Length: 143
Length: 143
Length: 143
Length: 143
Image (tube, rainbow over all chains, first blue to last red; front, side, top):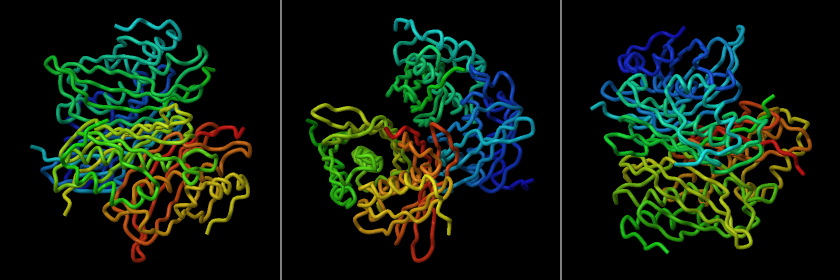
């Protein structure tokens, strides 16, 4: 289990506690460290697309938001991160009980932070990689 | 207003009516034609990220699903489309009353269909482009 | 034929005349305007991959560099543009006599400019779209 | 040092020996295994963009071609791989003596193979990560 990172913990908690869409989906913050963030989501039928798999949009939301969390651990207190762009590869159909997302900063920066997010789907106790995302986050002043 | 396309209308309606995540978000099918699909979403506070803008994940869901709709207008009746990957560029902060998404097939194919989705945000009667997505959809047998 | 844009013409010409890799490949500047740039390349056997088509890397170089040209028409004289990331979709095998690339700025910005590049392949007098690229260019001070 | 993989070694060698653009740039095959491929390139002034760094197009070519090599180690003898799309993030300016590229298959498949390529730039004996690419390669019949 990762030790909680002291600063900028406030920005990271703000990203998670004050994002209604993420709370509405049921995505929970598990842990974070310097340049890393981990989240989880209990899969429910409302998360499905038309064939009974977790919708790509659920995975994109989780990957993007967890990437934002990882980036937020590396910025100055007065700054915020905003997603500029991301690409997600859906590797396998996501069917199971839970999604876990691990985001790691690939390249820190004062203006742009590049983050990778991997989502595993847990099915009957076995976790498999279902998607991988690369995101570019802009660092901007909060005011 | 686009005339409804006759076939494969069933697959496209199935994609929209049988996708719980899309219904849960409030995304509605507006119209479709050969290689095109249009959707809309009334923005609600539950769609926001931590700074009061529409979450990138909401836009990604809408862009991906509308792209799937556009691709579904070009496949054989026994096939379905599944998202392989997509990239979304968030161009401007999305704040307003409604999102509209227009998806157009850039390249049809028997195995892979490439689609572009543009999302406009309507704010006080003015629509501005807030994101652009390019998606690759695989065409696979339904059984 | 587009009229040549006066400023920042110097930066755009610098990008084209002082880039050895682009000159080495044979990519030529055709025209540019505010937020647009057009280039062309006569296809030679040295541009091929192993199956006799133009290599994806040739197209990526052309798409990226022309996007840089289009972005350079929209920056202040003391700034330069650097590619942050791009995604290219190879839509059809490129076989023929010439490639032409048209780049258009999708979203200008003081820090980041998003550009789209389309490459057409001319074969026996007919041009078809062979690839589409979306690129994010950072605007940075020259010194 | 990786042991050479026996089959489909022919397809991989064909990809490298019969691709004029890759030979022209000076990209050399170093080693390959099941789902992996490694290449190198001695940096020359002709590889530069206008500011004296290795052009993004050189890196894109190397990342794409090495990804194709890694994918080719996992296909049936009668098939070939063709790039569908790739995204490259340029993380740091590439300046130095040599580029090395390591490609690893992230997800094998009978129709589509997803590969990641990392390029390191060696400068004064120190290697740093300068770009990361994710590519989707289609598996198609050779005839």
